[in-house]
Length: 629
Image 1 (tube, rainbow, N blue to C red):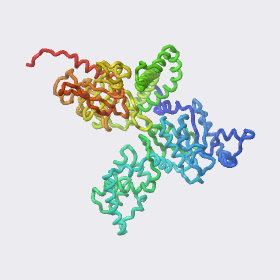
Image 2: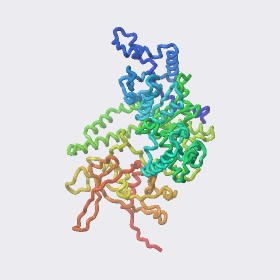
Image 3: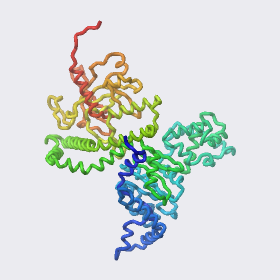
Image 4: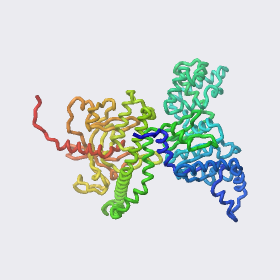
């Protein structure tokens, strides 16, 4: 039993304790260069730059005290943080760029700091740009490859600041309207124009009927738009005024729903230049009187009034309000432990100099000299990935005890609080629909590896391997050839003579699609099924149709077929080029048809091995001589 541990302690251990450095971006704070330049004799003197530096508020006692207080609170953090300061502006304040860098260029190296303290109005009030640079920095930080913690501090109204930041991270609703909806809105707008010509309606008062807080509440990913539409149609809640306004038009019920989308589009017109063309993933937020924050898949930002007593405490309060799930806490703890032990583990493992010398030799000379250069490079990549996998497994093995101990803390703390952490997932497993979806997603997580994508969102190229599941036309298949036979450079026993080294024969087992709702416990635990995600849905795939599995006893026979992969089995953007071998009885010949298959998922090794074994059992089964009664 863990005594005295609270959820606050768990959050602090996962997110606050790992912090090592902080970068403060504020146009009124001194940079190290400015401080030391004053003490350097014969330093180059740029009158324009000097005037900007001397005009900073930190030369005033009050602001100097503010800077000192901020630095001291970060020094007092255990362990003390490494502190850097960037002024975030250029010498010419008319230029909307940070020093010699654009906001995007500055944000690109902010991953070197664990925590970013961001002043919202970097351009100064006189520039009249209202936080434009800060919003660009925030958007860029939340778009890089690291999970960032950001504290936005400002003297401006916090509600306006978070609203402006959210608009800069959201795409407009209008840009997501379907063609059919846009046509309906166009017809309704023509009707409204007629009403306006008669003086019976005035669209210009839209902001009297819909304010920014209500609009953003309707954009919240937790069912915001459906809830907003329901409130509008019923004339209750925050959209009651909009409902009354629609009543002035005497609309039919179908038109009334269209009016909701028309009104949202009218509201967005004033702000249409604020919205993002590249919104971040998994954006969510919370805006209350006591706590304001937003998060994406790559970062978390809270909003605090400038000059606050303790920014770290405010950040921690916002993280607590976010209520990260136990899974998120464990993931953050794992990332920290890997970082903490990484150098020590690396040094210990690299003492095996002979083993690693041999490893590097296999990288320099991965195959025989007669392999084409392209296939040699494929084999080199394969062996590098294999090495990375072994290194990752070693790191995970060495930190798993610490992470498991932390997981037990989460459970014990949840136990003392009456098991409330399940609510952080916003999933009600007592509801049948949520329970079924949870089971399907969990089973998919258990059997499949996650998909890999490049920075541009495209799938990374990879080598065909055992366990790859692909869709060929309307049929599903899983590669059931051992991985060692798919490596470039392996002898191809399928070809008697001649052949092409770029062709890789492989065997695949046919799978049959079944909806997760049709699969019983007997199906799921038979070892015949796997789960994949395709076009946003989880589907079950089995070696036989689910109805046949339910109506007859399990049999060992599976349906399998030989294919030939082209280009050495290289998968590009989830597409595998292959030859489908077919018997051609005319002239007693074989024929092949070139096709492209969509690679949907890859099974974890033990699940792939299950299908490899199925083929072995199928082709070696004994034909017993029994007769039916």
